[in-house]
Image (cartoon, rainbow, N blue to C red; front, side, top):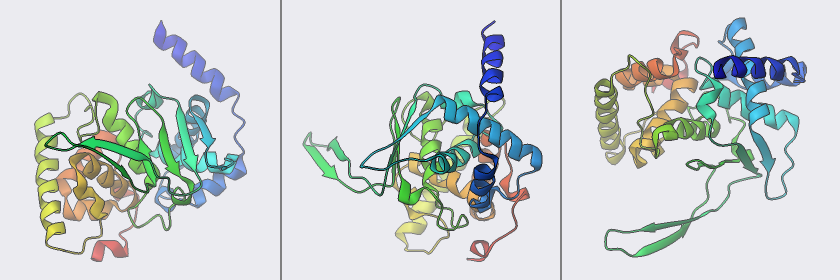
Length: 262
């Protein structure tokens, strides 16, 4: 009964779709990593974006006015992660807050001896457990779309990771996926990545991935969609796990780029 009602409600939302087709086409044209989508996939992405914009309230902060083209830019990138999943993967929260540029939250933490510290550091994005997702508009349109750095994908990957608790790099897996294989693939890759970063090795992957297993998952998700051949080259087991989790194979729809030669 509930599933039938959900299908009926979604059909009503999609039937009232007022998305500007020209703005949507312009949005996709600005995102190079989406160019390999088939016509059928592009249509499903559009429908997902319609539902996303219905369920999520995107508002500006710090004096920023969020127009329709900005909303579409966020929605398209957020929905590529769940293209073959479901909009329900983003349930449990409703707000996306967008600042004009980097924002500076106050971070409070307790160290090993019990001393409370408060830090203020600029951020381009932040995802709260059961709370809003925050973005810097200056970082939302990808600089190139081929460098593996994408703040929208990064923060929405954290939201997926948080579906079963804190962002620890272990999102809820689909039936048929192996928790052991996921753990082995990501643990080995994370350890190798940390070693390479400590050795000051130049990599075509964001070094921020070495911060924690949760950040590693988010950064690998960015790279999986933008520069999939890099992930496949350096960490093929991670690519295979992400392929199973996102139910997509970006490497098959994107040509090998210069980043793969590094």
